[in-house]
Image 1 (cartoon, rainbow, N blue to C red):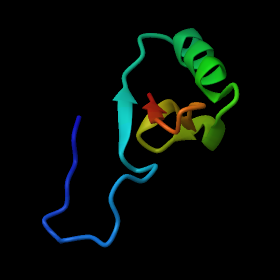
Image 2 (cartoon, rainbow, N blue to C red):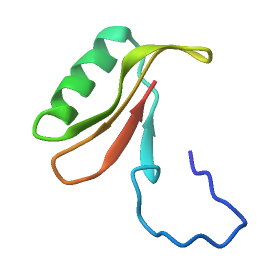
Image 3 (cartoon, rainbow, N blue to C red):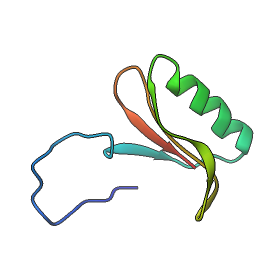
Length: 69
């Protein structure tokens, strides 16, 4: 999934430039979240949101961010 803005922005690569990963189970989300956040950083804890039963946003040790759903 790619989302872009038609407005010219002052920034380039940011945490909002991330991979969106659709998982099949809550266990899969938990496993990926744990592995990706190891030596990385958590941008949003795994939680229920208005549009998802479980969602989390994490950056790995290389700075690549993933939104897990």
